[in-house]
Image 1 (cartoon, rainbow, N blue to C red):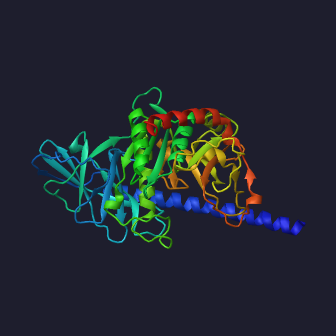
Image 2 (tube, rainbow, N blue to C red):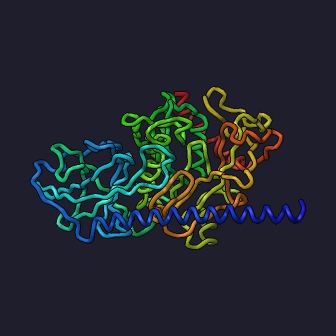
Image 3 (cartoon, rainbow, N blue to C red):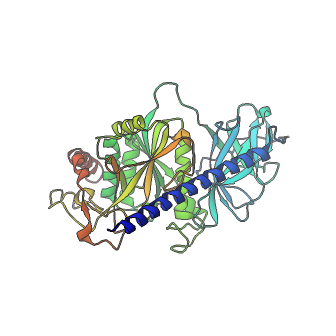
Length: 444
């Protein structure tokens, strides 16, 4: 490579990084503007009305996705988020960007409904689909006192029988240690999912690495995988969220409309991720966000706790950690039959596939995250559009995202793949754990 070509590559690299930085700053400013606009519109003393409502709050809706009558909006969960403004209620929602209307929040105090105007703040990434993740924000009037539920309507007065959502607190459960150190968020399980072996292997890897809870947003799966879910749920490792968005919207199975048209991106994945982060804000020290065929595998350490301690100590003030996606082709076998196990279990055996694609030079390489949930305001699939604190791209020498799947970069020949057996250091524990699950679930 001559000097001129080298200088050109340096300039191009600088331009790419500068462009990325400018994009992140713009996203952050847009988010800040949305919140300031919403807070400004709500005002320091929001207008409210008080009406009598028989059995106010008695119609508590326990479904995860609740339609708002006479609108193209769906409520997911409500959180009292006082990080930016006292008594601010944030309702994670899915809203049609083109036809949303004025919303009102209703709170119960005895037999009275106290109503106040709400504002809608859309998240910046919807990948071109009509519906987007949004925050419906409303200030809880002081007159409402301590609130435990909320209803949202398009009218100033709640409808008879209006469904109410429970309001969750974001505060720490206790002043001592966190209830959990690591919680994994998996979104979303759909399409009669039946990759049983890789599913079990991923869950057992999360357990080995230090996860104490895995939240799975499930739309659909095979009957055999449902047995596995039931086992893990009864054991306490897994919590299944019934993500029935396909009952309300024409969901896309892809990340952009040109690949699979629909109302909302990838089964509402971004909304599910935001809900999972907020659900665990007061419970878990860290939240791990990846798909079920992905595992953050430490290279320098043996578990997530040691890895995160190392990263946090070396990068004070960092609240989100991004791990580079390494695609291990499940079409290519490289274990010389060393791990040729579980032949009667449907799915991919990740121990057998140890050849990964090289990262693309000067191109987008996806990353997944481990975050401090208390620092997150909005999250997306591969980035955190709005957060407090710094962010870090974790070097591949420290940890990698192990993603065992079909070919991603079709330009890379099998002979150009990189052999990487870093997962094998967990093989003994993983085999033992998987055998235990299979004997309990699939052999019974």
